[in-house]
Length: 307
Image 1 (cartoon, rainbow, N blue to C red):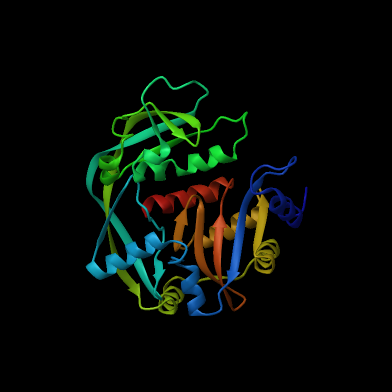
Image 2: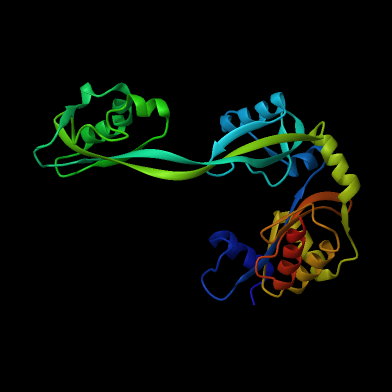
């Protein structure tokens, strides 16, 4: 049987799925050192980058300024599974559906054709600005395409102002658009989509990530001690390598998992539990991924159902 380190190397090379032969990964133990309360707070929260995700940043700011913020969509635009670190404060983010409606969107299918247009047509330059903008990418594709290529595009109009200004929706006034001598057949249609209004609220959990980390240290810290040699080898590997991956029915993995599961996980989702663990006087943010270890997976699922 391959050693635990051989299993780790194989899985890191091929992912946690099945790989090249006989070994099936049973689970993984991940341990990341958190030296300070601030480190704990960062590990236990998610952050929002205002540059990378400006829409969520605006949502959070609006919810703070007005006590709540509403946004419409097919699904919640932001649904964190743990507290959010925002402007160096830790918040619980909650949302509820406060309205539902059916939205009608209009769609235009535009495809290049070799047929001579026999129906109504309009030159691209004569289109209203809203339609020229929608067909702009197609115009660029047509300019790049060779004589053998035929290109097309499917575009959506969702804004009421666009609908009022367009000659292609709600019903197209033309059957063809001539774009730089390319003939494009256009056809309009509509789709109906159920959309909801999601109203968000933020509740302060801690004044700083460090304060949140200090609370977790005081209330949730689990100590791993009095381990067997095999259990210690597993934990040492997770500490030194950051992650220890095991095969199925690994006794040491099951034993360490059962020790952790004597305590409620801080977070649990999809057969993965997370704890704050002290081992040999050091503190680690620890994840137990039960994967195919049935007894641990069932225990984690039971915790997940309770939350």
